[in-house]
Image (cartoon, one colour):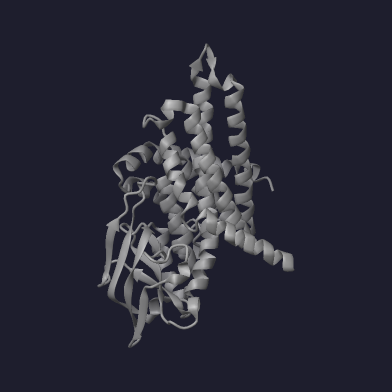
Length: 380
């Protein structure tokens, strides 16, 4: 599977575009902590908000491999945009297509494909890694649900037009008592709360969502009652591919920066990359980036070919995020004091990277998933 050859022209088209339209704004959105509508429109002009939405619903209908390349290339120039883009596609449009009714697909997917952002409300103040501990409640009442609760750390909470969230519809059956709903901004009882002041991905807004006696028509329940936990587990499997791709983009950016800097920075009359100590660092970075890329693309290919990929999605998310940690930290080390200067993007790459080790399941959670799947394989 030589993905680089097959998708060489596709990647070049993406890279040229993001270098022109997104890269010039990356430092500013990080520094000023705002969501850029100019970047949003640039993504929309290419139809990328609907990357994985089937053409029949107004999207591009791209493969998961192609989508991962777009996430990677966007994140290579701007981690904030990469995060917003990945969350919208993997956590927003995907569950509506995968679990929604035909009416829901026709209502929400065309808007999503045109750039109306869709947020994914799973995390709660008392339910982070333990997503089964959902406390938000949806009580049935005369053909509707009355929703009360709070979600936190929600990507695009401030800028979304729609949100998918989980709430407990029954106290019986543990996780089988959790259901999913599609909400629309502006519904009475739906409000956005505290915005998080993050260390990285600062151009992607993250905030609380509050629901106070919010009346949700039964027609906006996503799938069957009690299927919410299963739905978001499947959704997160795909989301981990995109977080892996985001981490890969940041690692690639750090590698390129380290290569360019070490060639242009002269000490004792020669570029510092003539020193074996620097070369060893570059070699480790390059090797790990390529290994992560192959693992991510293989996992994306498995998803496209409907091959079970839970183990591999956890592997690619875990490995790529830890590679990004290594590469961004090593780039700073190679740049020395310039690495911690805002005149260079090394520190931004490092700050943006950290989310990849925590969001959509921490590295510890990924190891639990991987070990569980390995032990299942042992029983086959």
